[in-house]
Amino acid sequence: MKLPYRALLPVAAACLAFGAAPAIDPKVYLEEVKYLASPELQGRKTGTAQAEQAAAYIAGKFREFHLEPPDGKSYYQAFDFTASAHPGNNNRLTVTDGGRTANLRLAEDFALFNFSHAGRFRGPLVFAGYGITAPEFQYDDYAGLDVKGRVVLILRHAPRSHNFGAHEEFASKASNAKMHGAAAVILVNDVPHRPEGGDKLERFSIVDGPEDAGIPFVQVKEAIAAQWFAEAGKPIDAVVASIDRDGKPESFEFPRSLSVDANVDLEREVKTVHNVAGYLPGTSDEYVIIGAHYDHLGLGGEYSLAPSMTGTVHPGADDNASGTAGVIELARWYSTQPKQRRGILFLTFAGEEEGLLGSEFWASHPELPLEKAVAMVNMDMIGRVRNRKLYIGGTATGSNFRELLNGLVAHSGGLTVDYSEGPESSSSDHTSFIAKQVPSLFFFSGLHSDYHKPSDTWDKIDAPDAAKVLALVAEVTDELREEPGRPEFHRPAAPAGHGAGDPGPVSGASGYGPWFGSVPDFGEGVNGVKFADVTAGSPAAKAGLRAGDVLTEFDGKPIGNLYDFTYALRAKKPGDAVRVKVLREGKPLEATVVLAQR
Image (cartoon, one colour):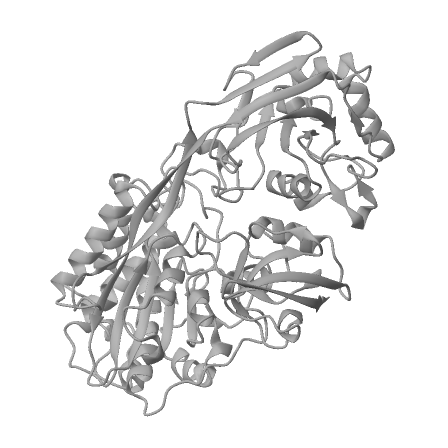
């Protein structure tokens, strides 16, 4: 039977704005987590049959609880998602050296990257060192090198002279080569630099990057490229040793007799995936949203923090079966309660791990009028409360949130609340609603060593404390449903997007460096970077940029995706005046943005 939660919170009932304390049974809650994180659902990666099975399970629960489809027709909201890329049948790489021609073999001599641009490329080779331009270290592999229309060959890592950080990322190297006008990139293992890594080709589809980097990007075995260096009179081990010793580039053009002719054939599969929503009406047309994402990483891949275990189920018990089970259990509870003034929209998202795709789609295509949403309450990773500490983000977005929470937390079964707005507080689906000016709260129990690993399993969930979190969410929801007024939206003082509100989770930003002030829209199908929002008072806002604009050029450099924007911004410093180009409702617009300190 269900355990009445008032037994755990003896004073909670006196603090509820309406009705009895919610009877959240930790055992039933844990069974929901256990199923969602089961081997049967294979980690619920968006675009897989197992994720759709999870969606059907959630919809079945909403149907069981007699919730209404928000559009009056279906619990599902469909949207398209580029699920994966895989090599096509027409991949080749031919090397011509004088009168000799060699046809390299895919997966044996060369490898493809999932973020590569597809198409043919050909031309002479230019060695561009590690492919790094880092003004902060006075280091530039492209200095004095003309690579326009040529194929650049670059080394895998970075010189030992500095910690080049994000400059080592493959996506950064792709953006840099593209901005210098290169036709394609060939990556080579710097075996003399990192002999412990050997001369291995990268596995396809496990490297972080954009959907399409806008430039072909392949890898060739070092043993093959070493012959090209030798014939140019520059042995690769000597070149690498010189760069590492002196901390200076050693870029050069290969003899014109050396050229490549290649074709990259990638097939990208577009699938229809689903958000799942159930509506419990109130006596008015206003409502509160309780949401969580139900997707995870499937068998690992590019976002796994245990990349060597790609191919193993990443069950995502805490991330985010814990939040999804919370939505289900709160829906179960509220479906048995008398009708209140405002309704509740129970909303679960696909595509969060791919970049908030589901929540962004719902916020941009709401099935209930978004202006009637009083608040959004998001639960992500609520299953492993440690030392009774709960993080609640977004409190600055609602005029009465802190006052409301302070009055309820004292009766939350011993939980202590941290209202800090750290990076994790803006890394989940509530961000999509903040961008639409919906006051939003984020309930989060904190990161742990099993995050994005196969070890995030159901048996590590603290169900009793998760039930306490759900009881607090219910109390907050009841207050929001019954109070005469509604919270006034306040723009957060700190940016509301990933990575402190500039390019996003790819930025590697931690609150330092130049501040632009945009919040990215993570939806697909845009060439450039679309702004979901522009932070009030930010450099971008002062320059007249606004939500809906699509950034296409930054300081004379073309911007095709979020990674390009990240790379271009990283090269600047606070106080720099940058000319940008955007599209606004399809029409070009230019502005000068004076970057500020974060």
